[in-house]
Length: 274
Ligand SMILES: C[S@@+](CC[C@H](N)C(=O)[O-])C[C@H]1O[C@@H](n2cnc3c(N)ncnc32)[C@H](O)[C@@H]1O
Image (tube, rainbow, N blue to C red; front, top):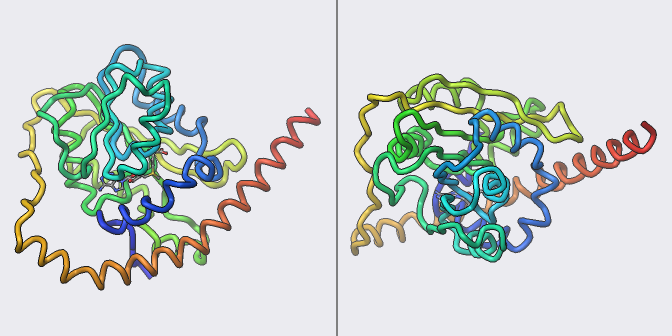
């Protein structure tokens, strides 16, 4: 069942309202610095670059970016104040700029950044091509857009619940979205956690070729009585989708934590005997 419950701004916001409380404690069971480093290498992220981290959350990726490129020219954008507040409290990120916004309507001028990066957030965005077009718009010509994200799980049982929870795209989908958004010289690699090479994600990077025409800026919908009424009418559907997504998460979340804990234990044992 492909419900893709959290590929919507409201549902993703609700989820991170709660999950933000334990995010930093749970995140190491899902992703690792090693896999993010591999992605950052792909985008050649070194030196004094101006960087935007989209869906930056509590700053996991940003901390690694800041180590490579400095924190002064780094901007963290997220729609969840609960997640972003935790990033703000991290000392190495103190010089950064923090922006509370939907990733689909980036509040920046054209050609503002050398790189736009994201990890673990892209598949929450309702319209992947529209989100990529916004990222292409704000990156300078010759700059690149890097996305790190999950791939469709192979075991059917896991895939069923994963796709009830969120969008888990195929590699082909990622490539098609990058091409449709107008990014060129697209390179992609598999990245995995050190404790489980079999479970991998994608790091995909595309360049804004010099001479690329900027797409028109995507502006937020105005907050009028009509748009508010529209949102209210959709609320029962939103809550139903959110409930199903949460149910799916309670199946795949503990499975992931258990798999990771076993993998970490095995890796430690192997390291101890070598
Ligand atoms: C799994 S967390 C990833 C955080 C961080 N990048 C990391 O690697 O740990 C996903 C983040 O995407 C954010 N997000 C989801 N949908 C969003 C949207 N439409 N606009 C901005 N941020 C969004 C969530 O609030 C959350 O902080």
